[in-house]
Image: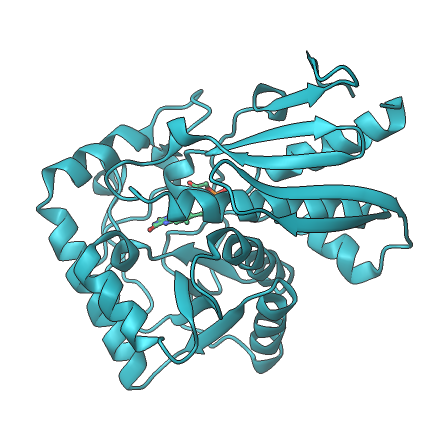
Length: 326
Ligand SMILES: Cc1cc2nc3c(=O)[nH]c(=O)nc-3n(C[C@H](O)[C@H](O)[C@H](O)COP(=O)(O)O)c2cc1C
């Protein structure tokens, strides 16, 4: 591997680890082989209670792959992307040559470092049409579909499923234990959700139940927006969690470019009953993977990460692992 190539990969890998992941578990590993980077699932970092089938972990790996790709493209590299069946090796990204990056590609790449999950109240200000169509196009360009909901029977049905799943999880000791282990983390830890990234408790209760994390309870209660814009990401075919994650990250970065904040509402995906009902609501569109809350927020602190070299193996010509250079 040449030094400039290693240097370019170091920046792309630093971007990859900025991807969102459930409870900031960062369930990924990267393998660099010449001009190729593979994204692998790290089974040790899959949440056994809320994500026993590793769907959300694969989604996070897909998001990390998008950050790799968008950074390489933003730097003027032409790349190919191949989704693999797994169970461990999920995506192969290969650098094929150079291209002149468009301004939009550069902006998307820069957004990787500005995006944070925002669990705090949003402003009661509608998301303009231009941003909505950009988000829908971003999902499509990423290989999935985004359905935006801001009122109506389907909105109410989705909100009711979030509330029901949240209530079921509130009385599940195994689930509560898992959440406690991964949230409310003190400064200095490189995994898990820091206490500072939690949102305050909601008062009065909003239409949607936002998950309470360790750290939330220490903040004074605040009023949340009453009816945030919701986005449901679906894929036409079942089992495309990694591809869905690739598209979700494209949506999140596009939201960042448009000055929007986002947070995840994963409760209905984590409880079997509500998950089935959510799937039934979107049967015509395909398989739902993620539920996002979108709107205008205020600045929010980010969550720390493990450095890229801790999760990357560079495999040399001989097939032996080497250090990450650059
Ligand atoms: C598949 C998936 C599900 C998530 N579900 C939730 C959720 O239900 N509630 C929440 O507050 N954050 C959720 N998150 C956000 C993560 O907690 C967040 O990405 C992580 O803490 C890293 O922080 P950052 O997104 O600010 O970089 C989810 C992220 C992913 C990728």
